[in-house]
Amino acid sequence: MTQRIWYIGQAIVDLSVRLPHLPEVGGDVFAQRSQMSAGGGFNVLAAAARDGGAITYLGTIGDGPLAAIISGAMVKEGIAQLNRPIIGQDSGWCLAMVDDDAERTFVSVLGAEGRLASEHLAHASIDYDDIVFLCGYALRHPNNGATIAAWLPSLPRAVPLVIDPGPLLDEIPDDLWRLVVHRASLWTVNRREAGLMLNRLTADLAASHATEVADDTAEPHDGVSTEERVAIEKEDLGENALGSATAPGVDADLRPTAPDDRVAPVDDVAALARALQAQLSVPLVLRDGAEGSWLASADQLIHLPALAVTAVDQTGAGDCHAGVLLAGMAHGLSLEAAIRRANVAAAIAVTRHGGATAPTRREIDQAMAGAPALGGD
Image (cartoon, rainbow, N blue to C red; front, side, top):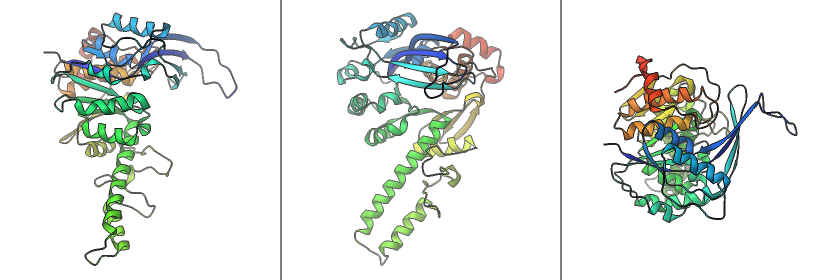
């Protein structure tokens, strides 16, 4: 039986422009092409739906012309919408600038998607065999994050919770961050996000140990002085002469090279995946662009190659990967097989211009049939 997928995130409108290069400050550049379409969280929704996933959008949309683009696109793709429009406010939009190197730069404007309320989530009849997907952009938004924080404890533990923290994961409030880390069943991140996560989790652990040190040193015992006890705790954390602490089991070379560098400079992606998964204690999907993906769990670390293509636009590649991953899981594929399928889908997507460029189920099947090394069960 196919599981239903529930998406908690923010669907907006994408205005995608192709530029030879970004303009300098105060300058101007003529776009080579432009496209306006549903985007943001819609890209994940569409990718899952095109691969046969039964998916429902649990977010909010407005009632203006931009919202009409989003709603119309969802109807066309067969994506269910549970909540009624927010009257009196349009949906938000994002300017996505893509240069000739296929690199992306974004500017976002918030709209009705930022008005998630408790009743919007309470309406969902989530079964134990369903899948819930949570987008990091919703977590870092003050209103949506607070709404999710209040609702999440009511989600049955048996329901799988898949989280893509996104590039702004450092801006997710601490209390909510700890809540989702504790509740997540599966994480999907790109390489940069993996470095951010590892650093944040390591810092959280170091802060926790520091608090324990402060509590313990309030009343010296066992004849050990305060200075000696702090030194012991620092040694346990792996603190070196530079004063940077790592969590137990995390190699020192995974730390940032400068205090203001939030991303761990790891040449060995396998080591990064292994270290991050050890901090999370649940399976991790680490996307590494043209190099494919890594699946890390407590008992295995597997590299899953990508389909070799020439990328023209990487906008929405991670969203496509996440959506097809969800659809594969909902269809009962093993996690490894679902990732292999998502790799192929994302590779096809980057050969097309725009955001919601996920292939259809048939296109994925045909590509996998032509790439036997990428096949799965």
